Length: 409
Image 1 (cartoon, rainbow, N blue to C red):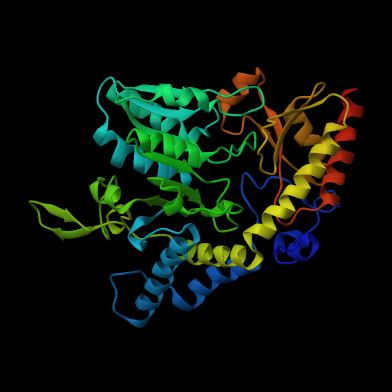
Image 2 (cartoon, rainbow, N blue to C red; image 1 turned 30 degrees about the vertical axis):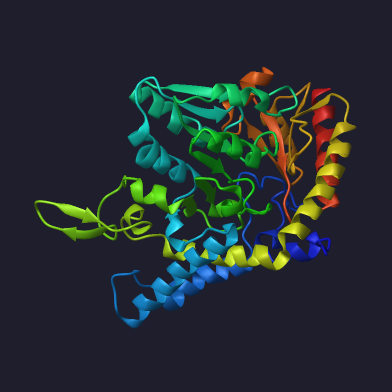
């Protein structure tokens, strides 16, 4: 049974909301797709590591070293359970989603790609799940193919099956679009990929905090997400990979931590995941990530989704009632992300003016320039809602947008 979350109580868990905006108005944060705010439990976990457990991991046998290693590897186990991976060996820590995608592109796909081969992505990918594949195809003289989308921001998957062939060596697709909010049917996409023995990577940066992820049930080959978008710290992210693929992959950074033996003539590498984690890792970040996962699990993802569904409905109705406002992305299945434009104002003007009212939204192309090109616009203003948002936040946004309309007529 689900229970509706109380955003006013949840806000008390996040110290950033104890401050007012420089305007003197309440801080109305509607930019969680860019990064989520951090609850006190996460801040305490990172502070606690530095205060009581600061040491390097794995190499030391002293008390602090053991404690730091338990913290770091304990987070790996926490992530394993969070996404239902089969083994801790399948969890690699990176700096974030971007590094995770690049690691798969270099360490896995590059070794399998030949001239004339193809990689398939979707028309709504974030640049971090577009440019690595684009650059790889350029290096290997391969072809990047794009799953098209329609005006509503829905992928046209009826075209995907005929796009796939023996030349297709990789598919990489986003679970939830960061600019349109579209929730893609990734389980269907994975089945299409595996029917032709094609490995697939899922970008879960926008979904990991709110939606159930079961990499074994989905049977995806790789999955990536960032700590800072699941209420955790910046500078730490996750790459999940099936153990058979990680063992096959080559590392892309070299040095300490990732080796088995070293001589001047030759070096051999440790097993996964260590072989992908060269150097001293972000141990404090791992402590924070574990606390963030604990916080999400305490709230319950079903409760979170019900809260966001209700907020999305309210926000869509309120914004849709504003004259001259157009929402981009109206897929049947959407997350709590709304991209919009006012016909009289540029997105940057919108964001600047409403910031004077204490309302924070994102303005720009959202690292999805091909999406903007599809709609023939340079940018949108984007509202992205989270657990600490309320209807009152939406009302403040609407009130602030009236100021924009007054200024620009």
